[in-house]
Structure formats: structure tokens, C-alpha cells
Length: 414
Image 1 (cartoon, helix red, strand yellow):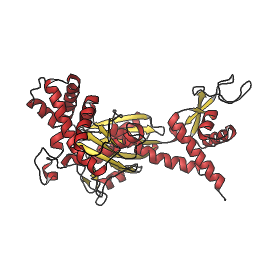
Image 2 (cartoon, helix red, strand yellow; image 1 turned 90 degrees about the horizontal axis):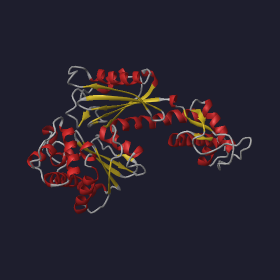
Image 3 (cartoon, one colour; image 1 turned 180 degrees about the horizontal axis):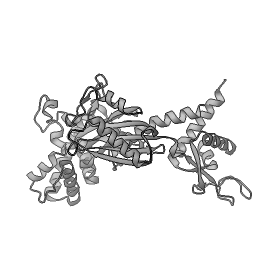
Image 4 (cartoon, helix red, strand yellow; image 1 turned 30 degrees about the vertical axis):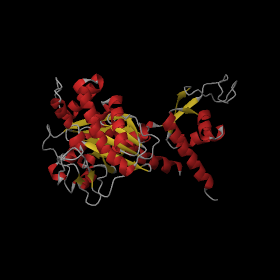
């Protein structure tokens, strides 16, 4: 069939690029072994990718393979021979950016096409800039990260912005995030599009944390899982069949208001901003619970940080009121999870956010035991593995996935 060799070359090129991203620098021999291609075919492939500006030679040795040459077998068996030339994806082939937006700050980062973060910048909000428009907050944060990377705005191919709540696809307005000042204008998305010279996507922050775990962390290799997030707020992300489930208005996973036993039923919860699951297991209830239990020397600071510190201390001490704090918190978490499990029956549940991961294995085991008594299904519970800025990491991974497809497919199908 006409064009088949070209298509096969493109498929081999893309497979090679994915392997180089996964494994790092590889020799021709090692790349050929991983792709199933002969050494001459692997050499031709690498030459094409070098000419396209996607691959660079990075040195010799390091991956345990040797290419053939005078005195060498070229079999990669470790027999005497010259060190192998190594090849890697050219990190300068493309750059992307991600933003993590909270009521306190806008944090931006730029990553090269390999996923390495090359620049970061944070803009505090709204305390130090109470009157600064959202568009300026975003552009200031982005420009700071771009400058730290030694780049310009035009070098960034795509930007993904993570916020609490979600932009309703039918109206373009931010929903489920009344605590995020300045982000609810109906004209905001148009204003951002006009101010930024690259495609911009928007995603719920907890969904991005789930994406980071799916690509890099505890949910890697899993197509059906729920991530429960507890930090500044309580929320969940749902992944079904390997894809994020966002819901009709983007509100899937907004479980903070989920009606659960143990708290009063509050109506008009979006107006009251209280009630439901968050009143049973949100990070804001942990300091209150600690005071009720008579735990001394309570830390000071924002409630999310205080909650994480208290949970970590309770997991470490595990006796007296600290044990009771951890057990009560675990029961509250499991109560809400039981509803999710009964509806979704996920393969895996990932506990993420500082108020959950700070409890470590003691908290995870307690939640799992409680959930085993409350739900018929028995999903595996794990702690989130992406601990460093998971929302920002997810934003970068989302931008990278689309950009790699665009860059790799365009250049390999020429």
C-alpha cells in the first residue's frame, strides 16, 4: 500500500522518542533492542531524528551497551569494543508551562520537552496585590518563570492552568471555587487568550494532581482510580478507562459537599460554603478536633499547614489523644470514600494532599480498615507518590502530552 513505509517509519520514530523519554540516553544497540529494530535501521532512525532536531548525541557509555567497531562484536554483550555513542531527546525541541492557582498565590513553571523543570516563579495574591487583575497575575507569574528559564514567552508552546473548581464548558465561567477572588468574570477566558501568545487550557487542580499520579506516581499503570485530595480543600478526581471524568459542568469530584452521616444536612451548600463531607474530614476540622481532645502545643499558621502538622504528629506518637485524633479522622475520610466506592468501584484509591499524605502508613492503614467495614468493594489504598507540587506537575504533564504529540507527529510524518 502506497505510503506504508513512511507510516511505519513514523511509528518507529515515535516509539523511539517515547523510549528515549522513558529511559534517558540510549545507544543505537540498546534502542534497537528495545524497539525490535536492526542496528542499521536504528542508525537510520536516529539520523532522521537528529536531522529533524529532535535527538542529540550526548556522549558515550552509560547504558551498558556497546556498538560494534574495530575489535568489538556489536552485540551489546559486554565484549571488548568502543564505548557506545548515546542519544537523547533534545530538551530544547519544545517548552511548555503550567500554573497552579490558589487564593494565596499563582505559581508558574516552565519545562522542556523531556519534562525537566527549567524555571519557576510565584506571585503572591491577593494580600500583596489586592487590586491586581487576574490577567496580570497570570502574565507576571508566567513571565517570571520564562525569565528564570532563560527564554521568552514565544518559546512556550502551550500553557495549562490549574485552579480550584472548574470552568463550565457551557458558560466559560469558573464554578465551585467562590474562594478564588477575581476568577469569576465571564470575560476572563477571552482576556487571557488575548494576553497570551500560546494555546491555553484550564483544568481542575485535583484532576491535575491525579494526572501527575497517573503519569509519574502511585497510579501509573492504572486505568480506573479515584484520587482523594485534602489540603486547602477536600476534593476528588475520577479516572475511568484511563481518562479523567469531568462531568457535564466540570464538577465531577467536587465531594466536599457530599452528604454523609455524622454532619447536619445543609441545603444550598454552594451559597453557605459549608456542610457535607468537608465538615467530617476536611483539613479545617483537624485543629478543632485536636482542641476538643485536649492535645497541647497546637502549631500556628494557615489551617492546612496546621492540619498536616497535627496529622503527622498523631501518626508518629500514636497514643492517647493523638491516636484518637488519627482514628476519628480516618473514620471521617472512610465515610465519604465509602459513597464513592459504592458508585464507582475503582481499582485503586490514591490519598493525596498534605492533610492525608502527612499521616503516612498509619493513617492509610486506618482508612483502609474503616473502608473495609463500610463498603462492599475492596479497592487498594495507596499514598500519593508525587509530593512536590503535584498540581503544578500535573499541569506540566498535561501540556507536555499534547505538545509532544504535536511536535513528534509533525516532524516524523514529514
